Length: 508
Image (cartoon, rainbow, N blue to C red; front, side):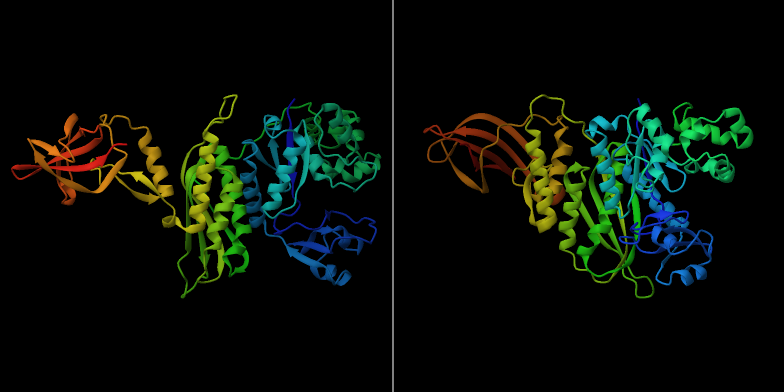
């Protein structure tokens, strides 16, 4: 049995969807109504809230006539381009739940979530996560779930509470439950049935159940083949085909802000919208991000300033919203804006394949390593990149050069890159204590002397490098042992034609 989620948003052009929109007048009790909101398209009313319909506003009225009937009405002017951009952003964010997302008619989306139900622990939790993410994007949503895509779309299209005879259920997982729910819905929810509304009302056919029971041959002669096909697809009697949304090869999304923002902390809500889209993109590509950048665009014109760039590097690639948002929040708290921000852009700079989950029965030490990496990311975002340092190895054979302090994120990347290179020759044992300045040793009976004559027990290990930076080192390293049993790390350095001995380290 397949499962689909239908997402419907009657007006995506609004920054936050507040009213319940309707397409005809209705009797509405006037106690707790939403505002009188009206959508204007090409100078005429195309959608309205229930309060506006109660006050006499109807579809097709001119803008002036609507204001005359309801002077307190809030007018919104439709922007198809912004609606499509908002729908695309929601579709990209929804790919964190399933890669099979398709655009549906009337500002809707369809998601094939059969394989996602068990992963997200059931239909109820999955619906809640979808709703929370869309609310975080700044929109409201009506969700329907059914075994067929057309049925999920119809359940999402019909507002709850419009008819007391229709059960307030949007999630159905069996064909029998789906059939009962669809039979009670108005038949005019099908776009193919709307041109024949008067004829259907004339024969007292008002629900999908009544429409389904009509003879198909006569129905097709008086309506259209498209109505029969859409009805059969809704009830699972005909196949459904979709064109899935394809993600771009790289992620770089821009968002214009509704107003100028002067405080960096206030940018977190808008930035989270872009992060949710990036997470959907990462999940669809099976990738994790290791470095991303947020660009803050300022006013344009002659006195325009260059965008403020905020770049965040992670010690370990990640794709979790909570971790990425927390890092960005810490960085925004440390930013002082030089000018107002009018738009932001988020770009994924570096990505790597997403690691599969561990298949072991018992937890491994990797979880502790992951917590350590998240702590490094948080400290780096809060204190600054050059305030969190860690010792790291450098590709150099000289002991005094091959170790240095590096930013934690750069050191972790350097370690991950060098971890797989095992073609280096096996080096000798290194002491626990390295002297910052080698100590010159005197010779006694042709043997280096340090408290007692030293016996060479291992070596030599020749190091001859450093000509590229003017610090040429020509040395032979040995492990030596004193009469008391202590072990030392010595090197013999050639200066001209002479050799000199130095103590460079002590073993524990």
